[in-house]
Image 1 (cartoon, rainbow, N blue to C red):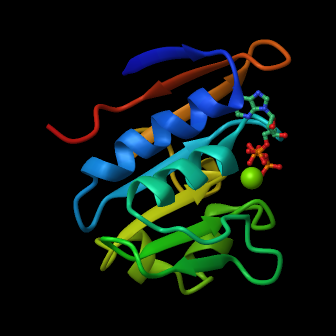
Image 2: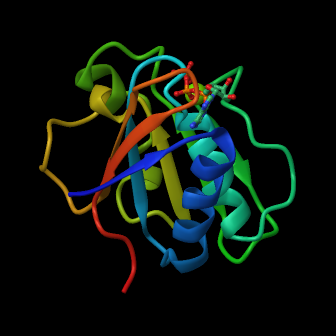
Length: 142
Ligand SMILES: Nc1ncnc2c1ncn2[C@@H]1O[C@H](COP(=O)(O)OP(=O)(O)OP(=O)(O)O)[C@@H](O)[C@H]1O
Ligand SMILES: [Mg+2]
């Protein structure tokens, strides 16, 4: 995995933007990290990098927000409220988690799979200071 230390929220968003600009159709970003680690900020960056200009926030009802209008549709999923992999499997999200017709960003991806069991871009965020985060990730794009 690659590793980067970011020093503020803007750097996190910019990292996401760089991934979004390069992301191919069918890409799944699986974000893991504690409350407040910055998963939603990273999702915002990815959506912006794909050209989406609207509001990005975790779904407050249901499990998914769909952002259209950019280069590819973005499916923003938050699995926080689902406790187990079984619950995730029963939630009807397969079309977004398996070769989506667009780009999927999943918060609390550890609810869904064990490490390394799919072709996805795994991202792990750790809070290392008030505004500092350690972000480890699979290589994205070329
Ligand atoms: N370097 C940073 N990167 C991202 N967020 C940061 C950073 N420094 C401070 N923050 C702050 O930390 C918070 C991160 O919130 P965010 O909603 O992105 O976390 P999250 O991982 O999605 O949490 P949750 O599990 O509740 O969904 C924001 O308030 C943001 O301003
Ligand atoms: Mg979040």
